[in-house]
Image 1 (cartoon, rainbow, N blue to C red):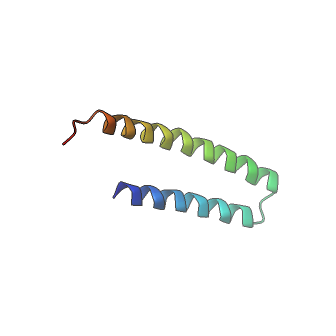
Image 2: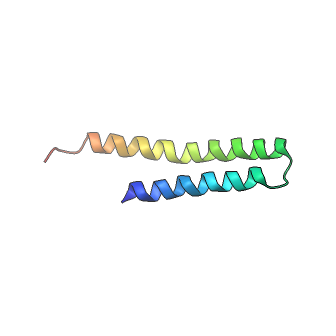
Length: 62
């Protein structure tokens, strides 16, 4: 179930970036905002994914 939520989150992020790039915003501003946004989401999602993998590895096998 969590995979579905993360998939939709990533989908909305990508769609937001597409909407920003197709708007009349200057290209250099769109590039800066895209890089800032991608770095911010990476800081949020990558540690959460790493902790989930670590926790799964330390669960007793059933």
